[in-house]
Image (cartoon, rainbow, N blue to C red; front, side, top):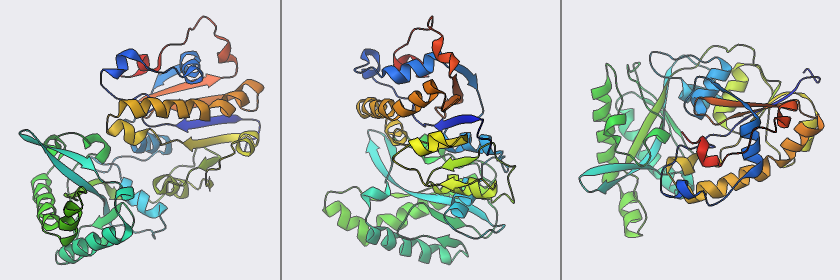
Length: 342
């Protein structure tokens, strides 16, 4: 680790939306520290449109056919052995009727008990075992599936679809129509399940089906990373760390030991991500206040020279690079956070 280089890279998916709604025009709160960081930073464009694709760019992961192999990397980061199989990740969804169309919503594991997840997993595994699929499904999410032959499809991340009609986000490519049929098959399987009847009787949302994404084969290795340390407990990020031989550390509440140790560090802050998926403007504003407070010791470290460079990634194709001396660009006046939303 180069202790003389003290650079901090922070990925904050959802930091700058996209969110829409009347609340954006009134900006109910200001986040002064965050606004100063953005306006004093130098902005640049980079590849990536969400957390996973931005991370893939930073670690040199390339597309296989038309997808990034997110599922295989996440599975590896969760402790699985290496293999050369094609993997997809599967996440539960809820379909809600809205006038003449259906809207899709995620069903996070916080809304499902372990017993409920395992009940659905048994149903799913037993059904697709007949198709000679390898299915790894249980009491935690996402599940992982490996079809007997490599599907030629391009998928969309679940976050792209939440709150929208799923028709325009269905798998595309040579095998796209076959996978449309598979998704419908799973919907019928879950619709008739005892678990869903019980959830609806309890006035809880049913699990309408599964959403597949991130298909591909685990890369054999990745280039040596640009980071000396990664601070995250996310399985996808841990998979990237293992493939690039980068030390990974569980995030700590006290940032000071990490800030003073030098080197180039990577952190990820995900509290805003699902709020943006849901277009929850009010709670997104509240979440920005949390980011503003969380950045305070980091900004202090930048001012004191403990950190030389801070790079913020909103995971929307932009980065904001702030140096210790860039803070003195007084002619740059802070702008409301909403002015940065694209």
